[in-house]
Structures are given as C-alpha cells and as structure tokens.
Length: 90
Image 1 (cartoon, rainbow, N blue to C red):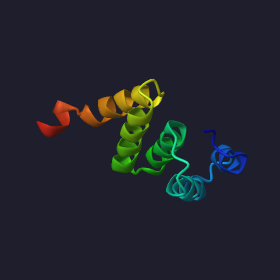
Image 2 (image 1 turned 180 degrees about the vertical axis):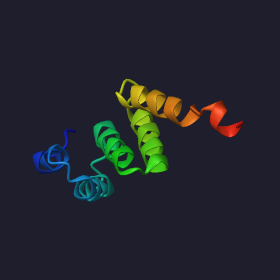
Image 3 (image 1 turned 120 degrees about the vertical axis):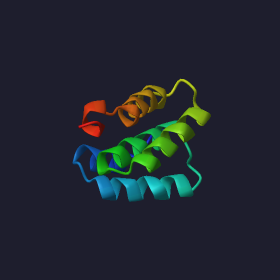
Image 4 (image 1 turned 135 degrees about the vertical axis):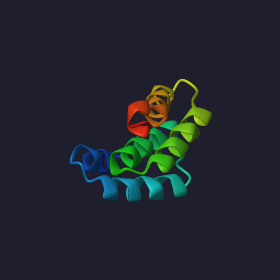
C-alpha cells in the first residue's frame, strides 16, 4: 500500500508533527505497510524521537525484510553507538 498524497505533501513541506499524526491514523486504521512505518520512523528521527524511530524501523523490517528501513536502522545504530572516548577521559 502506498502512502496517500496528502501525507506525502506534509512530509515534503517539513510538517513533521502533522505527518506523524497522519501516519499514526493511517496505521491505526489498519492500513499497515512497511513504507508507512519507514516514513514515520524517518519523521520520528527528524523530530528527535530516537526510540520511536528505531521501533518503527524494526516494524517495517518485520513486514518487509527488503525495506530501506534496514539501512536506516544500521545508520541509526551506528550513530547511537558512537561516542568520543576523549570526552569521557579528560
């Protein structure tokens, strides 16, 4: 299932919160797709909701193992795993 054009317009216009709410409604209505979870994960990441983004990427991968959410999840985890040892050892 593809994402409706009004939600894609929200994403393109950087209306992150509105797009998340619209995707929440879409998913709650039973129109569950890997693309919807992936897009919502991207929006959560952009909004700083790291845990929600990771959960959405996992959900997308459960529905479609070939989803681009796999690459997004690897990217996300590499960022989350990074730390600068010099900052912790002055």
